[in-house]
Length: 157
Image (cartoon, rainbow, N blue to C red; front, top):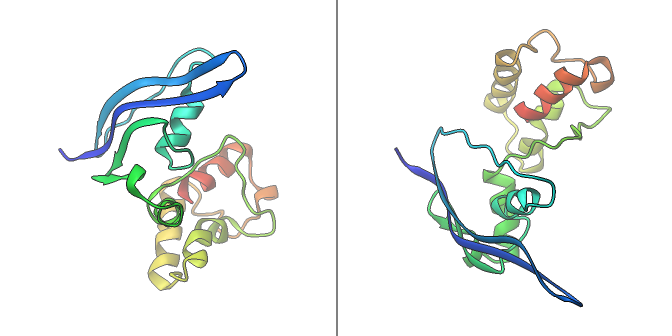
């Protein structure tokens, strides 16, 4: 199976008056396509920092991160932004749904931003929502959905 995500000796440090804080220290891992992985640890152990680096939101202080063989470290900020927009999906604890868009329109949002919203994109949005049990809620606003339904819309997006 293909390696979808790889980290090589990833380190993230922060300088403070008293010295250096290691938020992430020497993390190496490989995740195969289709594999599910959980980052677990106590508060302050670097989980959020690691996720931010894996999502190309933060650069590591040292080491390398590869997604589908592409080194995030070698990308310019513009290339990283484009890569995030086209290749990385985010599901936030707060659903961040646009309140005046329907469930389907919220799922279609990134396609619209990338000028790629066509019939196939609309069909895909409907299909994803149906697979998540929201086929009857396509035209509902977030305020008309339960918290769990809103989370599933965010996952489909």
